[in-house]
Length: 178
Image (cartoon, rainbow, N blue to C red; front, side, top):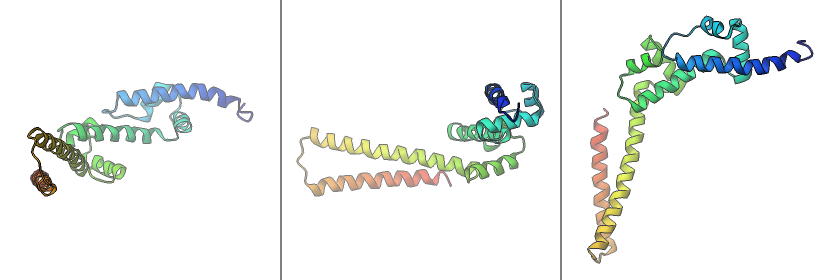
């Protein structure tokens, strides 16, 4: 049966169901400790066989998938909440804070605190870019409404004032991150 490949067909349909169950269990229990014994109980299969099926279908180990999902959760929490890094660690399923930081750094290349700071800076740079566009449009429509005739030098002077104003706001905002 194994040599002829007939077993692989059974494993394929059954394997997809095993992978679905494992993924669903991980999603539902991300905050909790998850052991291979729990997963094996869920699938009613040997832990090694469950791992082999999962790896053959997904291309990654169950542990690798668990870490990926926990890191995605941590990333989302750091970007969207004001939770402390230790609270993010707990919400992502890590009781050991230093281990969480080590895994996070290996996964993303920066610490959770650095990641949050960089995310906020990227978000704020996007806001300042929008402010420049809005300010430029407001200035343009203001000048049109007033039907003022302006020279190129006068217009560039107004734009330079706007850029300096935004640069000052950026500098003030950057100071809050230090």
